[in-house]
Image 1 (cartoon, rainbow, N blue to C red):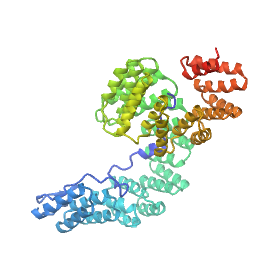
Image 2 (image 1 turned 90 degrees about the horizontal axis):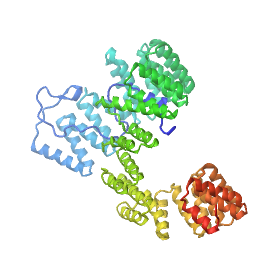
Image 3 (image 1 turned 90 degrees about the vertical axis):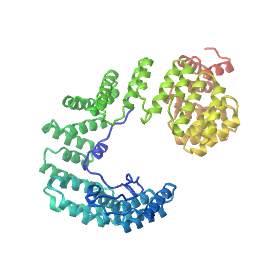
Image 4 (image 1 turned 60 degrees about the vertical axis):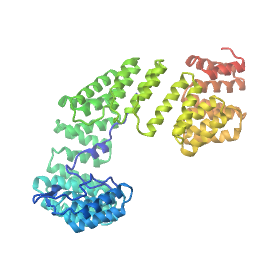
Length: 596
């Protein structure tokens, strides 16, 4: 399990550090539209307002004609049309002066990925609701992504000037966040430089400049601006995190964070960032010490508990990892508002239990992944069924598969694939073949189903179906090296079309040069072609990477044919010790009339 899980990098941590507390405009013109406002105007009273902006809504008479047009437009939009409904909403917005209709027109254009039309609707929305912050946010986000970025500058200037003193820092961060999406980084940075001039006494202004400078590759200036921010507010965690980010070198960033912690030992965010940076540098024990300090000040810090579990795993402290993950789950259970998914922790605890031979305990942890909405639900339920099958109860394992709630085709195909694997491993090859044959009627272009179906077809001597299925995998997934290798090996094993087999395996090896099983195939096809030296070389390289019994059997036969019978028998004994029931070994020894 060592090194099995990724740790958040410093840059990712910086990216998630909250700079602005208000919503931002959409990332691009093709983004999902915001939640739909009522498309049909209601009869508001005199105090009715348009959202948070405070604009009064017009008193619109909801005539039968207007209701019909808007309803028809919505129905057409749901059927896949956009242009007619968009025009209807725009005309209605202009006639009624209702900003909600312009907003709805912008949603339709965004959903249809029509940039120019979306911008026109957003302009109208702002015109009809000039005090709407949401409309302004959408407008800013949109123009920043286009060649009209200069239109954003006067709006930003006004927003900064009108922001209350206590909220101006947030406004600065929000501006930088929106401008960071611009394709023209240099122009965006020049705009930021002009806009922050009146506010250079604020540490937030220098942080914004630091981020902007970094975006155009001006690292030295970014470092200088971050240092200015720290000079204004020496105890700012955000400032030192920014400085660490813009330094660019993990070692230098670590020194910055460590020095800050010496003066500010209670800086939780900085300590967490420093600990993760140490993990990135593979300095696991110092990282653990930092997480423990964090946990000492915040015993229920779920992030620290989870990180300590991961670090303990990497240090091969399974007992410690188990304790931390259990505490992580306990704290999470007491925090119903926490949206973190416990799936990974539950899977790790299950794996730990399985490793020590506690199958019942492993299944019990998997049983806690009972929310079908969890990202790992299907994976956990499949793993649960596999553990049951490993215990020898095939019927119970297959029944567990039928109880998995699946809605998407990929998950449904995966369940059928695992069912066939259970049957195959239990020796019911024909039944497994039938399961996959039926599965392919439902999912004819699923590469995984096709690949396993091909392998089973080969075991049943249905070679034409095997080859057709593997060639279909190659067409659907041209980078699937296993399909090329499987077909090449099958041809080599049967002594057919050896030149073609060699070409197929060579292509697979180009895709995955370090794969020992593809190296084994290359050695075997060389052997079949009579190239004993090349065969031995390929098989020795494969066996050095992975001392698998199958590779040992092949290498042994090559050495036997070369006359090195003692070395061949030694390899076969090694293979027998690892897998006494290996069919390839048995058939090879019988064919060569060898006793070990």
